[in-house]
Amino acid sequence: MRITNSMMSNTMLLNLNNNLRRLDKWNKQMSTGKKFTMPSHDPIGVSKSLGLNTAVAEIERYKKNAEDSLSWLNITESAVEDIGNILQRARELAVSADGTETKEDKQKIKVEIDQLKEQLIKVANSTYSGKYIFSGYKTDQKLLDNNGIYLIDSKNDEKMEYEVGTAERIDVNTLGHKLFGIDVGSLDTLNTNEAAEGNKAQLIAVFDDLSNSLDTDNQAGIEKALGRIDEHMENVLQIRGEIGVKTNRMEMTINRIEKDVINFTELLSKNEDADMAEVIMKFKNDENIYRASLSVGAKVIQPSLVDFIR
Image: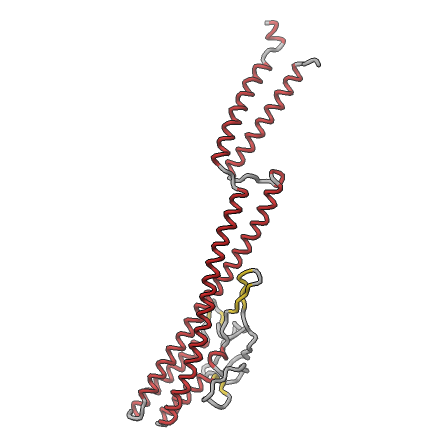
C-alpha cells in the first residue's frame, strides 16, 4: 500500500485526538472529583449511584422523622413531668391539712390548690410547634377550657405515627383522656375511657372537690382526695414510663440510622468518587504522551515540498 503525506497526517491527527480525549477524561475527573458525569461514561456505575442516592435520601427522611418524633416525646415527657410535680405538691398540701390546721390555714391551702388546678389546665393545653400535644388528631384545638371541660372528642384511635424505617412506625402522642381521665360521676375510680366534648376532666374534678373540701373545712373530703390524687399519680407515672421507653427506642433508632447514613455514603463515595492520586498520575502520564505525539507530529508534517526544494 502506498503511504501518502495525507495518510500520515490523518493518522497523526487521529492519535493526537485520542491522546487529547484521555487528557480531557482525567481533567474532568480532577475538576469534578467524580469518576463519571454522564451515564455514557459508566452506565453500570451511574445505575448503582442512583440506587445508593435513593437509599441515602430515604434514610435521611427516616432520620428526620425519628428526630421529630423524639422532640415530640421530649416535650410530652416534660409536660407529664410537670403534671406529676403538680400532683405531688397537691398531695403535700392535702396532707398538711390534717385536721390540726385552722380554717384560715385551709383557706390559704385552697388558694394554692386553685392555682395548681389552673396550671394543670395550662399543661393540658401544651403545644409543640403550635400543635396541642394532648389533643389527638385535633392538634389545632385546645384540649380543655378554663374549667377543665373537654373542648373536643378524644378517641383511643387518634394515634399519631411516624415512619422511622422500612415497615417501622411509632406512635408518639399521649391522648388527653388517658392522662386527665373523665368525670362520669365518681372520682374514686380512675376513668380513662374516651372523652366526649363537654365531659369534665376527672383530674380537674378531683382538684375542684379538694378545693371545696378545704373551703368548707370538710376533713373527710380532704382525706378522700389523698387517695384520688395517689391513683392519678400512679397513672401519670405509668404514662411517663411508656414515654420513656419510646424515647429510648427513638434515641437508639437515630443512632442506627446515623450509622446507616455513614455506611451508604461510604458506598456511594467508593462508587463515584475519583481517586485523585491515581487520576493525577494518569493525567501526567497521558500528558507526557500527548506532548511526545505533538513533537513527533511536528516532525512528520515539517518536511513539505517547499522544504525539499529548499
